[in-house]
Image (cartoon, rainbow, N blue to C red; front, side, top):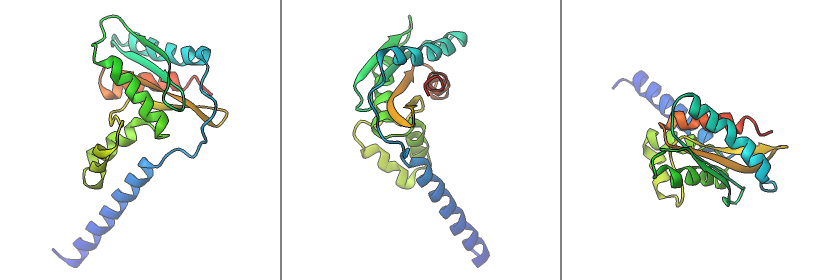
Length: 163
């Protein structure tokens, strides 16, 4: 391998590692008081509507900042395993202050990203997003039942309603 190719390779690796580190960084937002039941229902409604619009069957969970379940709803005919996965995605996003996609991406990158497998309680699949109100993390939404990208699409619809 020529020196020029080696330098490009090293620069490329450094770029990937830097991107991975920033993707895994927790949100700087402090934790706030847990989301109210009323606001949890407001976050779940658009997530469920997005799923219904696309004929996806999902479960939606809203947790507080400590991962305590605040609200849960499962659409008819949603696979039973999605019940727990939705809650686990929401807990992961709340407890680690980042979307679960960050863990999915780190794991997919391999190498040091494989350390994700050793973290207790982490779901490394898209579909969990922290909920932020007034600059504070008040909980998280987790969606499960479709593909990870579809779950994330539904979760985003819910998260976008909370400000």
